[in-house]
Image (tube, rainbow, N blue to C red; front, side):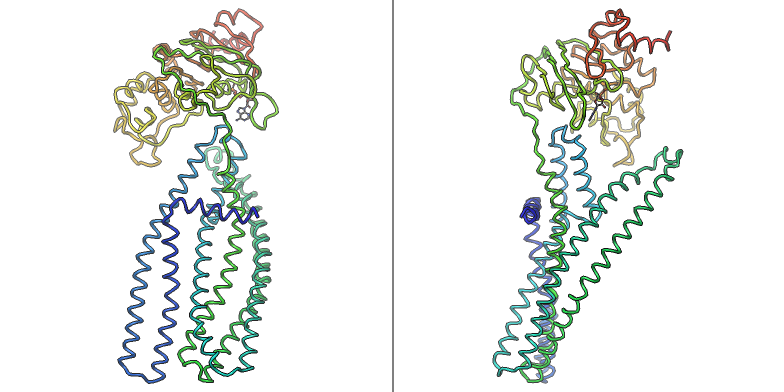
Length: 601
Ligand code: ADP
């Protein structure tokens, strides 16, 4: 039952992406289907007229009607075809947008969930390989319409043939032939149905393999960087690829073989049914029941009818094969966000008085065996500068992500000005933070858009922050100033920037936002020592009266902070000023400090 629903549900969604598309496409299919019937009809009329030796004027008129009819039909088809293509383009565009909007609306932990990432990748791959999913559905639903319309046209037009037959005395031979034709048609349909089912099972197996293969290949095909050259990664990749190609060919030759043997009886029965059709029509022609020209149209109509019935079964199977891909597609749209959405408005405070308190906070990543943060308690008052230090993997970034509500704590709570941060309106809450994450992301759009993180920018402010982070000189070299696109992805005039320059822009973006909190996670990791020293020298100026949290491996740069929290294995093991922490000679801070100090002393 669930399976039937996938196509229906996906079709409804797809239709909503552009409600104009299917009506237009339906009209086009009607016109396209009309054309061969019209021509069969007219040809048969012309042949009968010739055979009966009718007047030339009548003949010319028939030819003229044929030409005019074709001209009109093709004109309609061409005009409709254009509208259909435009509507399809808009539909596809809206479908892509809906997919990305769904992605962006997901809770951050959902976006990071490996299963959900896999789901998204599978949808992309299914689409890229064989347009499986919504595109395949569209194509086959249109095919269902096309063949159904053909069947309706055939039945309606064949009514004339049957009415002629009923007017002549009953004939055993014709009855026998009709019975044989119907029997062979039924056999064709049965084989088509049963064979189709078995073929679709084989296909299902093959597409599973194809999906797995593509996941692996898309992973390894993209390896073409420097490592690949130096370490000859090709030597690892090539045998894998060869093995996969062999498996691929084996499965496909199996599918083709099965396909061949399963379709033979159906093809034979269908040919026999067609033969009976020819015999019936010729038989009645010899009796003089049908005009000579009718042979063409009746054979044509009957042929189109049997072929359309066959095709209808074929596309029905295609739709069934596509169900699994649609289920994947719908599964993604069915993902529900479960992060609590608060509604409390965040006060707009000119004094920036936002105090934060972590109360016994623990956090475990989905699928992880161990807590990444264990029982963290820490408070941060307005205007304070907190440095967070610790070894790799000690939980520093996780601490920041929890503060920014990218995740909710598994235990304990984080409070801001006496309310759990979950209670605040999420958008407004996020607006109080300017963050430079380690894996920050700049877009291939103009520098101004990146700095202002918006469609418009305040030139003076943007230039000031760029100067503050030490990007001033490079900025002067930018050919179009703030209008200069970053990277060359979309624009040949774009400029490529180094890792250090990108980090400065990311810093400038955080400053431009001018939020009450500034959070810097290893903000100078990609900078050269001179640039780094410059940033530190200006740190107080940069932070101003904001509350600041600063993560760094370079302990000397934390000295000016009011408070240093030392993380170790998910816990806060020490809190204090530089001097206080250093006084504890057995402490982690002292260990870290001396490990670094040996390079300076
Ligand atoms: P730090 O910033 O101090 O280097 P993190 O906060 O990044 O440390 O990581 C703390 C712990 O959580 C590490 O053991 C890390 O492997 C784990 N971790 C980090 N991110 C994820 C994630 N998305 N899923 C599962 N575990 C994670």
